[in-house]
Image (cartoon, rainbow, N blue to C red; front, side, top):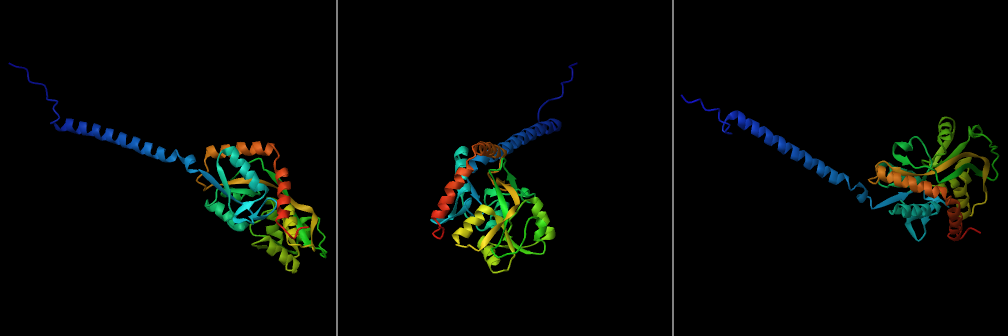
Length: 291
């Protein structure tokens, strides 16, 4: 008798067909997964290449740090703008200093990611929710009390401002500590521009104005105003930082590292005092009322 033939391994058998189909589907799935990973990697890799330039802005009423270029009011010029061009050279990446509106609007544009950077902002906890801050700070400023020259306000402590009507520019900060105190204890109106705030002070609609010293002096000189004076001591001494919007398409770990290294290098060179002196002279040349 002949031994029975072994079972056929022909793919015509149902079990074998299912096995082969399973292997085929597994292979297809693996290739599809690799294709997806390859595709997403191709999209993610050019994050830096998409960032061919950076758009920065800042407080446009902030001479000698920043102000609108009289020759092209869509641009900002000043010491901070010059610093950004030095940063651009370090990064090998163009930085455009663009006017986008008053200071409050600038912060909203950064929050929405419609501009990449703010060229000069004080640190506040609220702002860290939508911006990364770079250290070291590139300058320190003094925020002071301004009053009419006939004012009898005797200021030496924050508590001396209680019961008085103050004014400042929308979304201005004077440091976390003073901001908290002002919110709890002081009456401070906010207006769109420094010129409006000065007018309120002159018309007696505010007893005092809070603003930084150098920009305040620059604007008073340009407007040929001599009946407003600055009081001591300073309300606050705050650092100016470069910031990068969380929603900026350029905000990657690689670029943040490059910016941080460049700012350390530029900060170490202490370039801002020289830039400030140069831009004080430029502001005076552009302001025919300044003697």
